[in-house]
Image 1 (cartoon, one colour):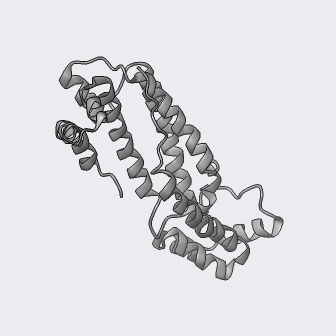
Image 2 (tube, rainbow, N blue to C red; image 1 turned 60 degrees about the vertical axis):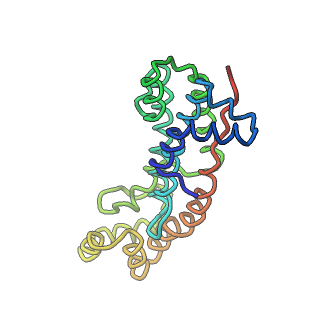
Image 3 (cartoon, rainbow, N blue to C red; image 1 turned 90 degrees about the vertical axis):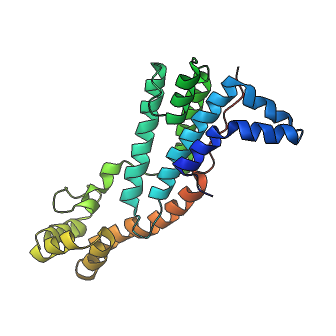
Length: 226
């Protein structure tokens, strides 16, 4: 089940109703909904789950390819660094539910240590679940007519790369086709580099994209800290 921005916000907004339900059921965790520190962490988690859900959706789809995955994962990892850095200075603008809860109730952010640790744990999880290389490595696939050929090319592969990027017909096709469609067409006339690119676009993207759909739903737990 995916978590939309609306449903995440409602989960925080309905905290009183949830608390009452748990109390009626005789469930001790209901007391947590009277704990401002707990509610701060809940608001933060609702914000983070929305961000993870958006990323998860970006990593899926029929036209998803490895360069695309690399871009999105690198972007999110950089955002984690940015969020952690801004948190150190008390900036919580990126966490809408948390900011609204703190400002509405005129509170201090006592959940900061948990948030900092959670963001660090997320970075570790990304390193564990995703083995995507530097995004720039795939520039030649994104736009072969601008990028330089990889140093890993053999002589024959680089020769075909030069021939293909000098082909005006291929240049026109590149502008009118999706990335996957273009490289499938390249493979017919320039099999060495076409096959090289197609493997990166399709095989690895399918495997890693499917893994992402599951692993991103498993956010590291926030430990109970006072």
